[in-house]
Amino acid sequence: MTYYYTKDHEWISVNSTIEDTVATVGITDYAQAQLGDVVFVEVPPAGAVLEKGKEAAVVESVKAASDVYAPVSGTVIEGNAALEADPSLVNTAPDSDGWFFKLTLSDTSELDGLMDEAGYKAFVETL
Amino acid sequence: MSEPITPDDIDPEATGTLPLDQWHRDRGARMVEFAGYWMPIQYDGIMAEHLWTRESAGLFDVSHMGQLIVSGPDAAAELEKLLPGDIAGLKPGRMRYSLLLDEAGGILDDLMVTARDDGSYYLVVNGATKWDDIAHLRDLLPDEITLNHMEDQALLALQGPKAVEALEHLAPGVASLVFMTAGAFEIDGVPVWISRSGYTGEDGCEISLPADAADRLASLIAGQSGVKPIGLGARDSLRLEAGLPLYGHDLDPETNPAMAGLGFAIPKRRREEGGFPGADTIVAQLRGGAPRKRVGLILSGRQPAREGADVYAGGERVGALTSGGFSPSLQVPIAMAYVSAEHAAPGTTLQIDVRGRMLDATVAPMPFTPHRYVREGKPA
Image 1 (cartoon, each protein chain N blue to C red):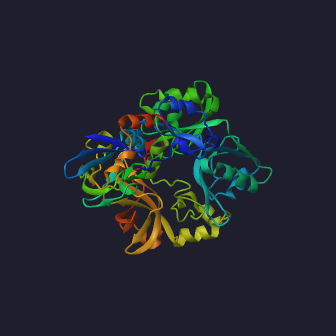
Image 2 (cartoon, rainbow over the protein chains, first blue to last red):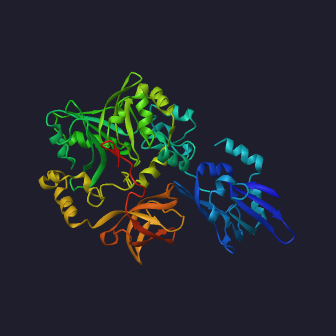
Image 3 (cartoon, each protein chain N blue to C red):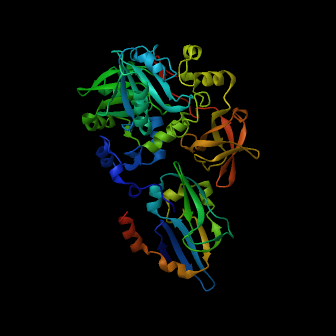
């Protein structure tokens, strides 16, 4: 499993099989701390076709709504249904149970422009 | 992910700092620009701070608000030409919620007016409007009336069921105040002006104190049992639950007191005598009904709707949200909106357009959570 990060504070964990490259997408611990208490998450349904940089999900805190953009293009396999019952998973487990959606990548070369963990950590320190 | 506004988005040259700026930063507050100043938006998180205030006591820094003194001959009569409240009838130490109105009766600001022993009036106005308010008052009050802007005073609000008990330790006698009364006290030898009021729906006080003692006194108050500093994020969710309108969102020059449901701020004498801006229109609407009204809405489901979202009845647009968020106390999304009068009755089912999805909502009486003001020594 390889992790990639965006400047918009999404993480993408990538698992390549012979058939597909499958990625899980969530927001980082830094992002959830900035948002504060998450009270609602809208995730894309299975089958939704996402385009890199376009709206993919909505996350609402007590105070404000924020869009989550697709960090890579692809087709959604599954949205995280657990977030409907317990949106606070985004706060308590942003890197694991609080994932947003899984998708098959349509263009694996899009991963090349993303940061690795060390790169993201260095980026956050500049903020 | 799109982020909330960060300090990088704001020109620091343009943003002022208030007396407790470093005090908040030392306590880990996240600071944001608000009304031209750096203000603490949150410490531990809005949800926890909100619930803490409802159960214990929250200390808010509201030093961005404008504190004004109006004095001079017939100050009450002159203020009554600009405000619809019964200013002349205010006894010393008594305060009222009132409204600054434009010629058409549109709301320029909402404010608190307190009568002081020396015949002057102490006004607390919103931070974002204070410079416009000062210009408006100076323009329209006669030259004999003096207007002082107390820029060297900070303002704190201590709110919640344990607020008065905590403050009584520092300012003995405060507990004898009842809701909407005020007086002069001392905290650790420093003269302060304390009113039993606030804007969270809770019992509590607002404390005006010299800016040069703000740091020390804020630490003393925050050091009392049950008290924690609370950011503006929770202040907003608290006042929304309490059904209290926020200027610039739920009130503006396009609204008047009749539409806003603030008829309580216009007593019988003023309705009969008139003599305040827009009196004919406002009094007629108070009697016959306003064409649109401020209402509370409780949404179905968990997704909050935000300011600006359109409100529909069937397929017809009937209004828009002016505030919206998630209620930490009730654990449901709540909102305020202006809707046309025929859709304003409690129980009416409406729809809110949130990013193209129609969410069901029901018109609900406000406050959403009960007020706990202490009137005449008894909890309300």
